[in-house]
Image 1 (cartoon, rainbow, N blue to C red):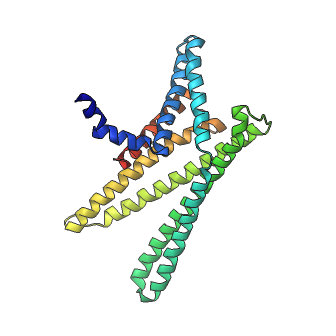
Image 2: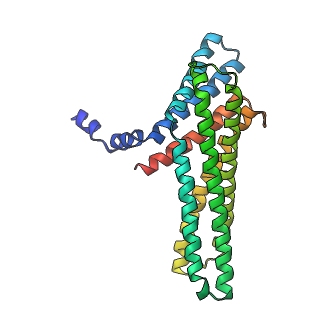
Image 3: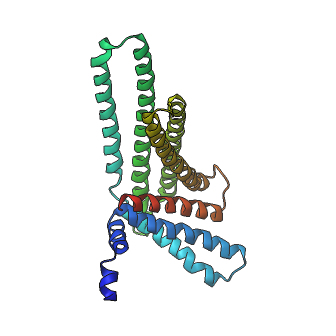
Length: 260
């Protein structure tokens, strides 16, 4: 039967797994929110009636508030991620220290270089997670004012500080991706593609490079949002809306692949 074919279709099961995740629902709402931001700007630029613009502006505003409510408690997730990154780095240092006496000069130099790269990634990851935790905490403090529950004259300043830490978090993420791409280029230059293991390694590097490049594009798109709100860069709502929708679609694709 047609109904059975629809109910048991693999695509429907995949969508339900995707929609069951908080991140999947957030990315869907975020895509609509930033498209509404772009389209409201487009209608204004084309001299549309205010009655045509208002529904899209309201949709953007309401979805933004909804997503802010759903993010309550999320700072704990970022604090946990920062703690786990620190613990992982400590374990690596302990492991390297126990093997230090068994290394010769050449392997020690390579190990030191690898350790330095690992430390940089850890510091950047911790800084990024802490920045996001502060951003989400400040954003939650400004939420009652945005909902109209408790009006506070300090809410705009708090929200501005939240945007600042959001920008810092994205900048740390961009630094991590640029560092990863640099390390991948070094690894790629060192492999021998004539060897079977070299071919496998080259494919692994190509996959990691693609993932890092996609994340870099996503971060650059997201950076337009807080920098525009803070006045650091003069992007209009149309550009910010398109950039936000683009990064949201990338997030949807990534989450969709994870739930396959």
